[in-house]
Structure formats: structure tokens, C-alpha cells
Length: 97
Image (cartoon, rainbow, N blue to C red; front, top):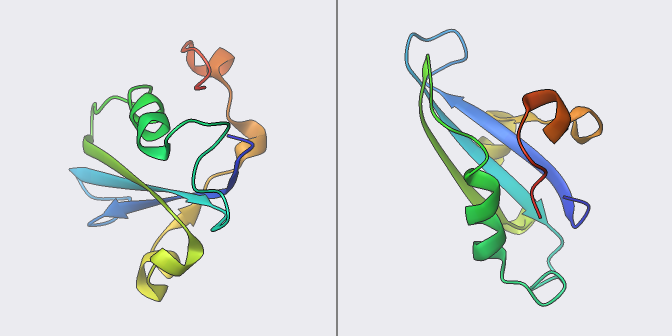
């Protein structure tokens, strides 16, 4: 996770909806085509495997992008995740690579 600039999440149609589809944007620096020789798509698959749909969250998808890849709408309709408070210990799941 330290290789990322930011993680943003969008709830569609809204956070208070009965059924929510989440989109996670893992924002990387544009100069980092890979991370420590690993492909971003492999890392994305690993990260998404840690989050399972359940309850009101009916679908979860994600993309690894640069800031230039995001539209202004994507950015303003999403919320930043506080990486300082994410932990595999709190959720009972292992840490992502």
C-alpha cells in the first residue's frame, strides 16, 4: 500500500442506498509502471480478494490508475480512504502484499 498515492472509493448510487456498488481507485504515481517488479493488475487482484461483497455492498470492483486517468467526476464523487487506519488485524484478514 505504501506504493500508492491514495485510495479512493465511490458508493453507487449513494452511501445510504439499500444496495451499493463500490468502486475502489488505487492511485499510483505515473512514473511507477510496476511496483518492485510486480504488475499492478496482480496487486489489484490480491487487494480485491481481501474485500468481499456482503450486506448492502453487492459488488466491489477496483482499478489501479494515475491521477491523469481519473475524471474530475470520479474524483469528486469518491471519498479518500484513510490509509493510516487500515489494518488486517482489525478486520481479521491478512495484510495485502
